[in-house]
Length: 187
Image (tube, rainbow, N blue to C red; front, side, top):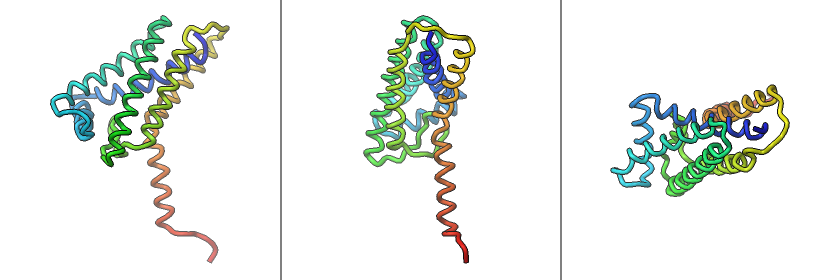
């Protein structure tokens, strides 16, 4: 495995692991995810819970496939990840385009409404998953320390993706506080 392959496996796999784990943290967490899908009004009510289960199953499957050292499994995992991410991007685009203010439940609880940044994030991640599929099986000389570093970098980036809404919310609240305080200058 090459450094890019290891890094991208860890980024995409770690991100999907966090996403699935937050939805499977208990019956209440899964119900909240399914309820958010219902609020999107993309599918008839009877299909919402099975669709929620299908999403979580797909996320878990991506994690499992990317954990298998065989190149064919990894390529399949990356392709599945890209398909899911593009489907998510399309769904978010439709929901946001309708003006629906449903919060993003991608990584557990969030009050951030779905919007353009979620579409962009998912499209970018789909491209990264595509790149992962492209570099899978590439030959090259690697060192164990480099592989560990690539894995840690991928996991860190995957974790940052998972908390991106929280990070952006922190900066937005700082901007709001600064605006409310007014200009500060010499008097």
